[in-house]
Image 1 (cartoon, rainbow, N blue to C red):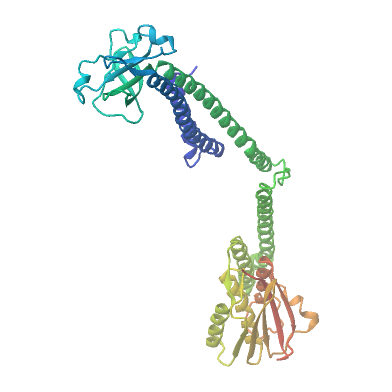
Image 2 (cartoon, helix red, strand yellow):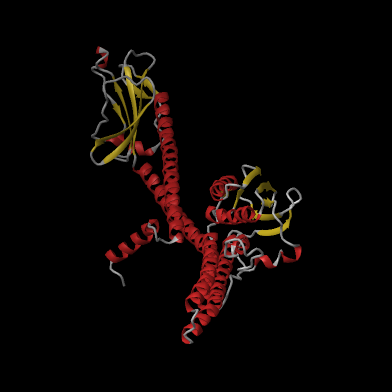
Amino acid sequence: MKSPRRLLASLRAFAFGGWRSRGSLARRLITIAALWIVVLLGAGGFALDRLLTTAITRNFDSQLEFVLTSLMAAAEIGPDGEVLLNRPVADQRFLEPYSGLYYQITGDQSASSEARDLQDLPSRSLWDRKLKVARHRDLQLHIYDSKEFPDEALRIVERDATLPGSKVLWRFQVAENRNALDDQIDVIRKTMIRSFVILGLGLIVLAALQAFYGLWPLRRVRRAIAAIRSGEKSRIEENLPREIEPLAAELNELLAHNELQAEEARRHAGNLAHALKTPLTVITNAATAHAPDLADTVRREATTMRRQVDHHLARARAIGRRSNAQARSPVWPSLEAVERAMARLYTAVTVDISGDRKAAVRVERQDLDEMVGNLIENAAKYGQGRVFVTVKTTPECVEIEVEDDGPGVPEEERTTIFDRGARLDTGKPGTGLGLAIVRDVAQIYGGSIQLEESEDLGGLLARLKLPIAA
């Protein structure tokens, strides 16, 4: 059994721990619902208590007012100017001493000299006591509470009136012990408090059940993820509510994306190892045989290895940046930057850019610069001095066409030219990796590249398609 202090601490931690950064979502929902229920039931209970208390008090006062009216109707002036009742009041409690129901008729002695010798007319229930008469005029009905008797609280209604045949202003008072009124109010309050407490607890339990039942699919998702981590499953295959289905779909897409990246990383590592294996074997054999052209062999094979490393590093960088779903790069500034660079490297080459200036692609800026830079550099290197770049926007993608006036590429070789290290003109400097890098990076972002014949310049036309950015 927990001590009261520890139990209170546990309840406090349950109620307010949900607002912390690592708190339970169900606890937060239950706490918010409980606080809102308490506020609403408290405000409603207070309003209902005021309403019922006012109604019961008004009914109690109405009975006293009826008795007061009957008393005034039965009052008359006697032969000596005194006040008399022409008929007895019906309630027998007026005849029983200290019964809790009293009346008193008092003349205003300060206003008339003839009232000074007149005696008050109290009910027998007052016995040896008198009701206090305040010095003010109550021409309208006046109702108030009084504690003038030390052993009981009174509810008093009073009114001033002048009787026929007398100039004296008479104060009519009817008082009743308000214990019966307070008992009725207490009974109603206790019943209402019990009812509201039961209702509040029921609503909180209902909110707890709703929170646990509503969040149960998330527990299923957690178990499914644990099963994926342990290797029992590869995807979330649970039948989930419509609100949770997008979350499960995104998680499955994330798993597929991670698997694809891991597979690409393994494939790149294998390709790089395979590409480096042959040059390393050649260098090792030459060194073992003490070949006279060892230095030339090392330089040649090192150049080959550098090309392979550069190629795979470019792919690795593109794959790493592809994970940014918010990537967005405007095409025109990238083309202008490449044009300025080409103007410095190839002074005899003219690069003309036209088309959609507002086009943007879902590609990182560095990768976009590398792709268009390789294409424009190839056009400037192998052309005769003219390069056309055209930007077109379609609903699905952005097309970047790079045309030159060079000899072009035969149709049967437009596929093999994308192979790593493939070069049709070995007289020009280069590594033969430009088009291969463009193809691989474009595919990583979901794009493509095609080689065609330029109708305007007669040389090669490279059509690069990249996904459009919103």
